[in-house]
Image (cartoon, rainbow, N blue to C red; front, side, top):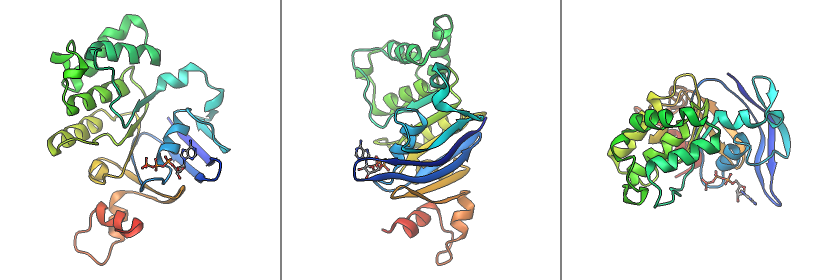
Length: 240
Ligand SMILES: Nc1ncnc2c1ncn2[C@@H]1O[C@H](COP(=O)(O)OP(=O)(O)OP(=O)(O)O)[C@@H](O)[C@H]1O
């Protein structure tokens, strides 16, 4: 599977949110790093087809994604930044709702729900109201809905926002352990979210892709520090 973005630009009234962005994604985990306003959300919305580019094309295995119908939506999983989950829904109801929106067939829906609830360790609480879940449990529920229906292109927007260190590691491992055969994009400004799991890091600044390389290549370029990590790379590019 190959998702190819060719010379994508997105202009809002007075802002160029993304400027001539080109990239070919194949299976793997990609970290998208950049400060506020860098264009991360814009890039994610373009891939999920929530917005259209001002210029450029996006191809999935050679087909323009805007010519694909609902089958494209079925391939896409998206975990939003906000935990906007109706609190009176149970976890099961929420996953069923999201699954139907994604086009998961009714006859396999319940099996799918239980499969992914089990992967994120929520099977026991699936019939409890989401309002009673902790922040980490809600986050894991959102991860489950992103994977539901065996999505092949999954986008995570700040997946560990607001979580304690233990839950952070849990979420990171969940994404990593379920990533085989998928294109996974994790947008964050929390470097640790992607440090150990992303095979490629994209650094976005004011709408421009300024770097794209494996983490060890990026850290290898830092010469003024012993054992530099990705945080040092981030600081060297985006300032302190
Ligand atoms: N609907 C919109 N109308 C006008 N300008 C917008 C709109 N959406 C985004 N922008 C602008 O485009 C630029 C990129 O925004 P974007 O939300 O993609 O950045 P981001 O990297 O996701 O930021 P954050 O880390 O804060 O979420 C910013 O300057 C933003 O103000």
